[in-house]
Amino acid sequence: MKRFFITILLLAVSVPAFCQLNSYGVAGNMLILSIGIDKTFINNPGFDSWTRLNYNKTENYLMSGHIDISLIVKSYDFGMHASAPYPYGIISLYAGKRLTAADSKISSYLNFEVGDFGAVYTDISPVNYTLTPSQQGKQLQLNYYNTYFGLASKNYLNGLSFSRGKGKNHISFNSGFFLDLGYEPWNGDWEYGYYVGSGKYSSFKGTKVYGVPQLNHLFLDAGLFFGIGS
Image 1 (cartoon, rainbow, N blue to C red):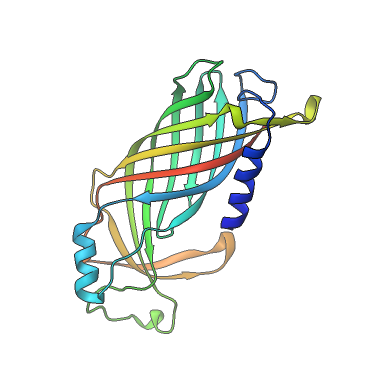
Image 2 (cartoon, rainbow, N blue to C red):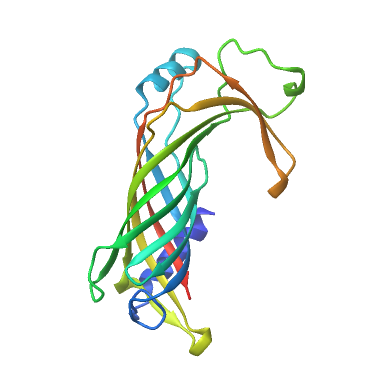
């Protein structure tokens, strides 16, 4: 999957053609589907001390993939963003306004977002936890959930964009980067359990657990994206 993302980003860089944010070379209405890579940065001193004490380890910060659907209406954008939990996952809705001029080299949007911040750990468990009968023999994981509010800077690099097709088949390809700053005003919940079902029918069957330290209320998520717009 990482090779796929890298290939797409290299393709965007290698194409010399130029286009503005939408497929017709002007700033206007547009629907963009984007994918890319991102990494979450968060300082968890309490949680890290807990894992070192009980498991002689510190959980890693890994790179993950994300998907984004954005609707641009003149100088405003609205959308949904989701990243895979490796180990941190984010699902959010956002709305914002363009900060740069229509003819600038970067189309920069400042977005306000609200969503869920989560973490998935498959190699640790609650201390002194007794498995329920239904959990015996299952692939168990420790999950964290919390609501967050944030500000995000989303930036399209117009010089690395290009377009293909004509008329109704005319679409654009846009590359860029984003930076999200999120804050969780309340404490989150820890659950220990397993998934049942598969695909869109899967659901997590977990039991709320206590005694696991909270993750930090402040986090930073940064990434690159490649989008197709119409």
